[in-house]
Length: 256
Image (tube, rainbow, N blue to C red; front, side, top):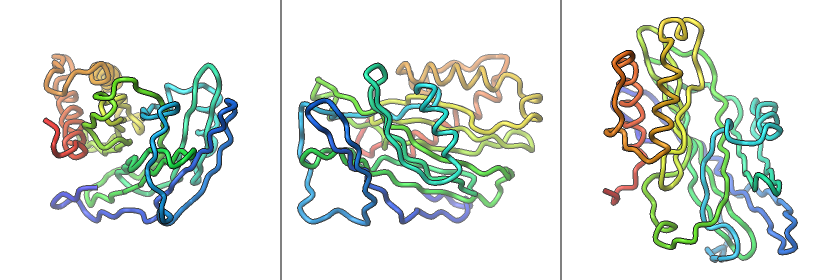
């Protein structure tokens, strides 16, 4: 995570996790989870065009209800799980448990095949802000939905560092936390993950504002293309400024 002047202590967790998922051509998935400290020698990337070559970072609100319930039940402690049905497809979930941090980022560092193993590498970074007013812990996790893209040009296009990025926003003397979901090409969702009753009373339009901003960004609009509403101009400007900052921090350097 990029350190900003005056932002406080920033550190990266050292427990980088690599999930290997064994794929059986009979159509049955057998999942093998391995925690590795480093790549073993000769563990190179090998493309398998019959399987997944892309992924999307998705919100818990966009997964099946039984998977949602499982995540909510497990998120107090670190966990890993996969979920797959014919109707919904596959989901890969990595949770890091309770974090006493104002901001958390989970970045997808790698997603590729080695022989018949799907390797998913995620990394957690957290930031304690000196001026944080939030006393509520965060329970960061990431949900990855593997997919396949036929278009080679689109498949190779990377705009962002895929992941989930949590940011604390100050409004008056209170704070909310938002999370921005990025895959390699798009904003997939923006959500509030912490809002107290005082904030809800003071800013009743914040939830509909977030919902509208999320829908417009996930539909392909840029931050600059979103029109601020007159009824909640100040709140939406603060939200969009925070979102824009996240996008700039995690944009690939050589993209326009």
